[in-house]
Image (cartoon, rainbow, N blue to C red; front, side, top):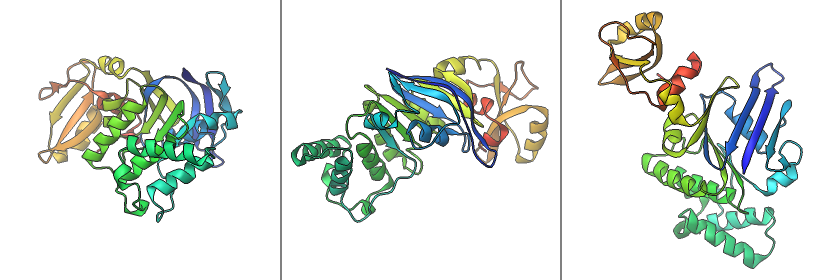
Length: 293
């Protein structure tokens, strides 16, 4: 099973080109869609989730035309948007039961069995009668995955799932997504490089609506061997280095900027070769406005 996206484009009425001839082949398993805020990731996710129209292009999942057979797609789709609303005073048990009913599970016994199994799967069984308003961010995200898994979807779309989660909750979420991704197509859209590094065997980098890379992360990392150099500098020196070199990222280490530059040849004295990683791939391929400071 694979999801095939071909020449997908979307331009908003204000002239913003959110997607510019995007083509991707997404196999079964966890696929990371990586890009800075405003890159077009959420637009792509909404189109795949049948919530928004594309201007042109095609999307197929096996024999389904995703852009035109929306009702059929929704039967096999699970979707966890970046922000999802719930009735805050309702318990997790009752809310999940209601959502399962809306999904078409009309037989009470079958629905209760499904809901109980999902709550146990996402480790919310012990708090199943607690109101959702009292859930932590990580608990809410686990509930979001539970509702997305109703009906055993073959396509699961997860948009910015770990934003705002503490490290322990992120790890729990990683483990849950890894388990789910063994049997279905899971698209993880995020601007957090670590999410993709730890979870995904295949990834795409998108920036300003265009695909900058698609494939196994290690391939892109290998292409940077011998081309990433690092150096600690004073804060006042940063503007000068940005003028003279292709500075792809900088971060503070012990109060001083640690810069990474891209260069095919060794730069001036003081730089040392860095072992590239997916962050270097990301920052070397996105626009300047996508770089993290």
